[in-house]
Length: 94
Image (cartoon, rainbow, N blue to C red; front, top):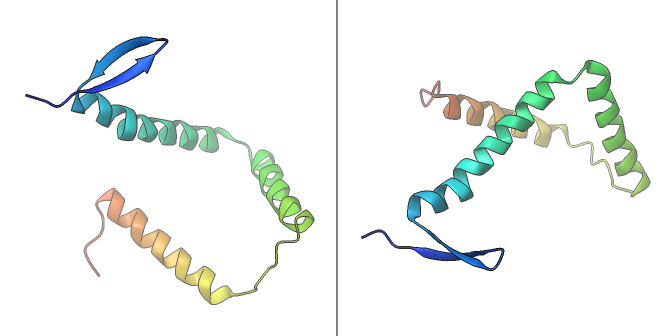
């Protein structure tokens, strides 16, 4: 027998099984991530620059420091590439 969890929605108790909980916690966020990716792909170059400039302005206005640590950035980029290959199934372990 699947375990069940009680969730309150508008003062009505809904019983959720494990698959429904999994959907709401994992699959739903994957769906949100895919929608965000589609929105990013649909953005024009100008929109991307506006967003990037807004982030840079925020960093400057809030006094965030630029460490100029390019080695860290290079490491993060390598890990991002490895993660992307792993998640796409292309990772061969090398």
